[in-house]
Length: 66
Picture 1 (cartoon, rainbow, N blue to C red):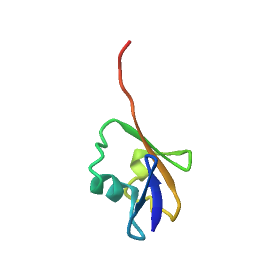
Picture 2: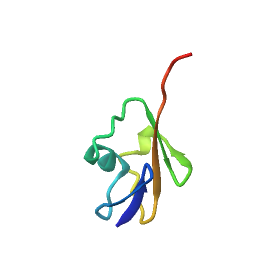
Picture 3: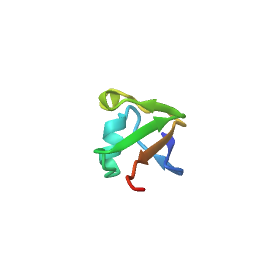
């Protein structure tokens, strides 16, 4: 199944959850926001959210500073 993750086209297994994807690609989950098709997905939903064919997933990290 083909999706886009942070601008890169990748192939994943069907019925992969968002949390499984993040773990598989070793994306640090502590301080990120994940948007799928421009919709923010709450962290509480990650282990139940099933990724669909052609989803566009962006993982955003917030940095502090001034």
